Length: 247
Image (cartoon, rainbow, N blue to C red; front, side, top):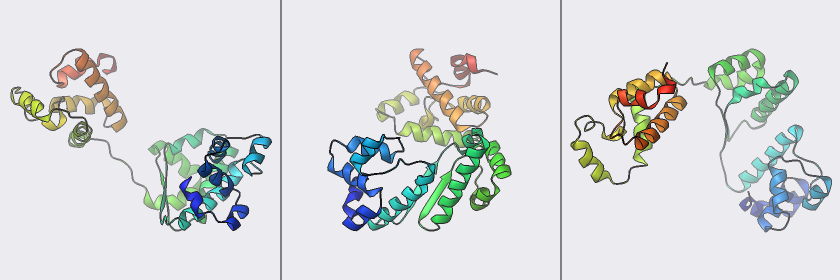
């Protein structure tokens, strides 16, 4: 955001309220912190707002207008595409009905006002999405063309996930390969070590294919295996290490 200040000319500096704190951020003055606080939606007292040259806080009504100003500035800076990722969209269903509908309308206006060069990715539970379909048809109609339901993990997909994580954490690869070649139970499971194929079966059973749950159990199993001096984690060892989660 501070680099974007280079693309704020004097005319837009006075035209767009949002650009004033952006310039302050780039200057690294005593008011930089207040400028950041204001940009992230934190409420400032009137004296603090006056010092950074803004007349109001960024509330729900001003948020869309502020975003438009950011998009204009990004376009000047040469950014052709902006992506917004919003996780746990289902939590909006916990709001009271007036606040929920207001937020749904805000999302709808965000999409309508930016038909090009903007991608908004919502992540939501299936149950939460069904509730949104029932209560926010105008919004759901705009985003329901591109709905992807994530399938539960199977053993092969889980193996790929674990392998990807482990690949970034390996240290002495040669020593590990030598160790695995000496152990009959693990010599064919290098990519997912310290887990074996039988452990994957138990992880899938316990997590029911949910990737978040599966990663939680893997983390716990590895920590406890290290503490217990386990050489590897097969199905039996996995259940022994995580007794409180067994169903």
